[in-house]
Image (cartoon, rainbow, N blue to C red):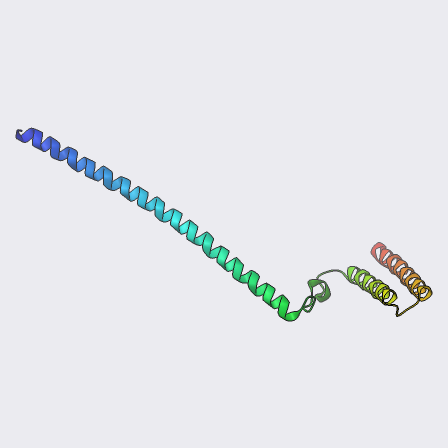
Length: 131
């Protein structure tokens, strides 16, 4: 092997080493990117799980319906609150009737009054909207 061939072989060996180095660097960068994405997703999932557990624990400690909802704070309009209040009064009357605390006649009388009151409230709201 003369000097020219040796130089040629050395140049090929250096080119192969540089090519392998570039391929290894690209693969390493891709693996690092995938690892970063996967660890981010896992971290978010763990955080979401912790928030869910904290929410459920808070709900359990306060009891169902123990904390004020956004409706009662005032994010909804007053008309929906009054409709909700009317429904809850009707629900209480139904419960009293089912438990035998009030008679059927008393139940029908009170429900009739509730429905009449709701109709008047609805008319008042409609008049208010027209103004």
